[in-house]
Image (cartoon, rainbow, N blue to C red):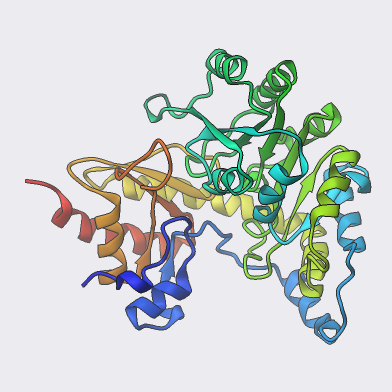
Length: 372
């Protein structure tokens, strides 16, 4: 039985665990969510302790400037406080950009997170796309990008590394080349590094982007630090542009608990390294297990999810439906990512036991989906 149309979770994002539970008539804890790419280790012990200690602050209004969090973010990213804009996740910042920068044409390097396009359309901007191909591993060809920038002259370019949903990491040197191209054609670069923590700060081009005066870097604490329910992220930008973003934010953008959790999370480098080691190990194992299943090809990834290319007549919508109905496992149908279509599925990297459960469920479901 299909999920009821009126209660079917939107295909725009993963992580619709509450809507899925309602539609299936089951408890949230009965579901295993591989559709949202969140650190399976959960919030660190330091974060949990900080949250418990801060519960008595709930009756008070939050610090509108998020002063302590901004200072912690500035220290972590080695930037001045004036260049840091804390926010309730990176998505609200995506939606602020077209409203605070001058222009009317926005280009998105695709396939990409759909909120870039939603933000541009919401503000009445003309949408342009630069499409990468799965046939060469979603490689970025600078000559092709230069041609598109020269011909279409976008005012803003949205570019993500490591890319969502492909998992490809573009080296910092390559990103600096993109930044140079944007400067040549008068384009503001919005660099989304929401999953960069899983790769390590040495892979980030944030310093060059901020120093250029012609870019914004978006970061998220919700994925790596498992704080999706609290909503936490930031923008890193030249001070003048950062001030425009701050001025466009609503009052009390971040609640007390989110601010406290962010400060604690940023002060635990040992936990960060443990997470990166665990994800690297489990990603390798998960790719190996899924790669044994006929008709499913895991593509290379540098982060905490795998993009799966389907063959043998398999389709992502049907596979997603069967996984959740038969096994109560949620996976991400990538049909709504421009440039992918119904033959791509994304799965998060979770714990060893959970990853084995996913692979076993896929092995059971896939044969019934193969076209004779």
